[in-house]
Image (cartoon, rainbow, N blue to C red; front, side, top):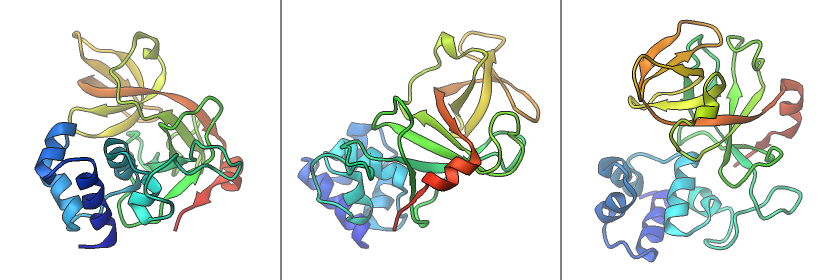
Length: 221
């Protein structure tokens, strides 16, 4: 078992869950995925560490790579605030479909300062390529709040981040579908996906242009 997996097991036991299966059931996680994360067969990502840390009452920085004490306020940015920087959880824009490629568990994490009004749930995507030109250029950062809530009426007609029932995460313009609970997803460039079912949708809270993004990126270890 590697150190990251061992810390996850330690956090789970400290939170009062005797088994990995009990923790997964209590928090709605896939049992096999969680078990693989805890036994070290599948290293978990920074994004997943935030979810596990919130569930077990520990710091995500400690859980991910032991960069801070186990418990206490989340590590702050350089300004000393007690709300940590936003993790960059993936990349978007490499293809016309607006698909988000979530960061894997092996690469060092990247962070960026919180945008105005951002909370501890703020995350960011890095734009790769030119398929999102007109919305965000190559190298830009797209921020949103990782709240996992259903689409709201004020999102209609807006470019938002969505997760489909299939597990795909996309950046699309949200439109009404042909039936209740269905949505058309219009690409910045590329075909429109019709009558999709969504797990959640999130407003884009800020877009930072490439030249500024290069200045503010924080590299993790």
